[in-house]
Image (tube, rainbow, N blue to C red; front, side, top):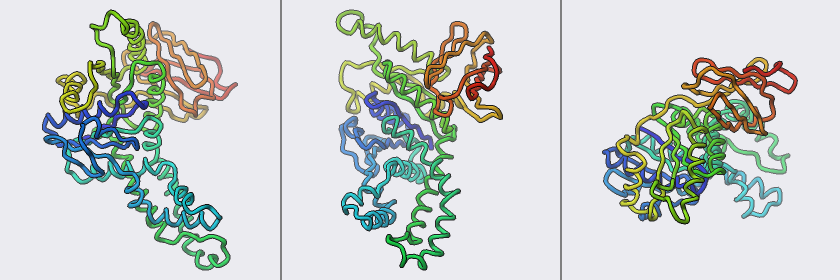
Length: 396
């Protein structure tokens, strides 16, 4: 099954792009499910059709689903939540607040992963289109398997063994209840379900992430940051979609100046996300809701392209630890070997090579380090980062 996740800053049009893509997949004969992981669901509004927590028929070969987070938490976190609520209550926390505190930050994202896993594993669909929450929530969703694996490998076995072995002996002397084995069993089942999703979502033959943005400065910056962290976690982005672009015929009147501003940012998008394909969607003359308008958007976005295709393989940038610092490798296959100019501003790195310029949002690991060396080799720009005072002088 092909899985495509759409993410981006809130309000850029992820939901309509997701719905349009799903509709086009269905028209091409793929049995398609489009699923919303955003707590503020709007997928039903896009289709103008009621959707529930289970797949609901929308059109031929097309189903939609809006995850009910409360139901999912009850089903997957219920026993742990009961224990935590009891634990907090023994410390004098109000019962209602204790129940709220027992649902940890990130549980919504975890439940979304479980639904993606469930629908992907049942074999009912050829394509799964995921309308993700805004960028920040999506990053938490996609980083969850790494956090879960670390906890399960490093802490969980020892914690479970100690508590289940000595718990009955020390419980009478403890001022709060210790977790029983059913709590640990629930955690084990839950986290190992999530762990398998990382392999699926980072498999470029099965899954891709597509960034949706508008040609606006703040939106582009957030999309750059998202791309940095997607690459850092090993996820593959195969397309960037620039939505709500003023069409060519807008030459006069109120929107003429806006079109000129957008022209500048459209060029910036090309520089910021090369060599990823950039697909543009015009600003339509009416609201994109209902199957007719979604089909119109799909044709404008995709044309004759297969929405389930893979349009870029591999990662745009990678970071790894070297003996004396870190190495950032940026994939620029058409770059000629010329002098490299680097300018670091806070968490941003501006790279200039001839007429080429690229703004890179650095991960936090690199933001506080110094850039000392850069070179072009085999279609990649390789940049080395050192602690201040290490690494010698800058090289081009």
